[in-house]
Amino acid sequence: MTDSRTGFVRKSLMRLSWPLLVVTVLTLLAALGNVIVLSIASPELNAAVATANQMLGIVYDVSVLFSIGALVVVAQQLGAGKERDAARSSRTALRAGSLLGVGLALIVVVSGPTVLRLVNTPEELVDDALAYLWVIALSLVFNAYIVTATAVLRAYGRTPAILVLAIVVNLVDVMLLGVFVLVLNLGVVGAALPSLLVRGIGVLILMWLLRSRTGVTLFRGATPRDGSSRRTLWAMMRLSIPTVFENGAYNLAIVATLSLINVLGANAINARSYALTLTALVTGVILALAQGNETIVGWNVGERDVRRAKLTTLRTAGWTAVASAMLAALLWYFAEPTLSVFGAREAIVDMARGALAVSVVLLPLSAATTVIYGALRSAGDVVVPMAYSIAASVAVLLPLAWLLVSQLSLGLPGLFWALAGHEALRAALMIGRWLRGSWMHRAPVTVDVPPDPAHAPKEVVAVESR
Image (tube, rainbow, N blue to C red; front, side):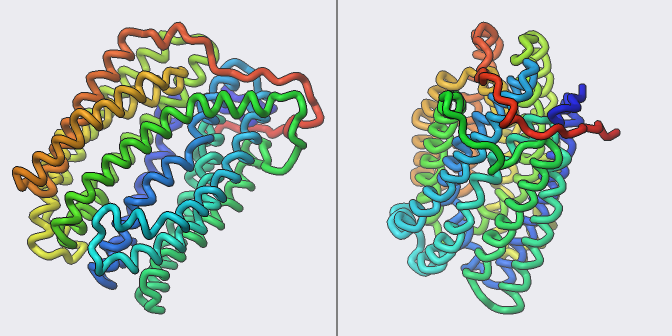
């Protein structure tokens, strides 16, 4: 279905997800290129960047504070036919996300040294990791806007526009990294500068894409005085805060487990980095399908077609789990020749291969959890799933990781087994809640806005590509 006034395009799961799948491949190739460049420059440099990026995981989770809610609110408004409300909600989210990015950048600059030492970062990596954090902090000013803008494009069904962004920024990122690190020998600063530059470019591209594809702009239209913006932000935050809190709690648990791996030395850190880089392909497929399904659930809930949402989600979860198991098995089977691309030592290859073997169990469980969790969130059911996830981290992930890594000396594979146990419990809880159907009786999360033609976006003719 195409709405010529707003640029809203109703699409099927695969038509929503295939651009996100391509984005995943491009992002993975860029990440792979980054790891190869950093490893060629210095294994210690790669380890320092990997450690710093793990610290930034918590910050990135907070940066989606308004994007998660924006996707749900805007998708439900579009599904209900409230196109003008959706445009205003989008603009409100973009402005709030931009301010959030500034605040997060300041927090990283101030807290970076303390956090690195709390997670037992090896002394020889601290200075490089800290320098990387400080440069990346500047890019966080852009990051919160980027994730909010891409959420708005997803809600409008404009996922091919996100592909345009991915092509440009990933190509530029790898090229700049090679020049800064291998040609100019800028070290850790050269590793961080490409992220800063490409995110700045990304903001400009997204501003153009939003205006041309949806009619939504960041600056056009004054903030209304009827209180609708505050209601919109509150509706978004009610949806986002539990997810952000859950993601933050999960990342804190991961940081705690990271300290167990850091004690094992740079080889273990690099093995974990390589294993995660490879499994990111599977994770990306999972996320692409989950995000497409989440958008469709939002549309369905907005128009009150909850039975279709339920069946679509169950099918998506099942097929995503099967696909992720097959891909994980292929990664494990071809682990040695693939890991040789990084020029890794034999000890690192052995550790990474052991982790990839466990991922054949871990990733299908993660697929089911991710799809169902996103669907529950898009239906407005966020508090109980958050509690389930945090309980699983506290009751399973942390104690099991301590037992397997520190006490039984299973190393990196032990950490992956702990993650698999954590995902198994989450999957059982999420699927059970989805099947019980309490989410089906919730009212749609929409924000009604009084008529105000002066602030409506200009009309955009949406032509559905074939």
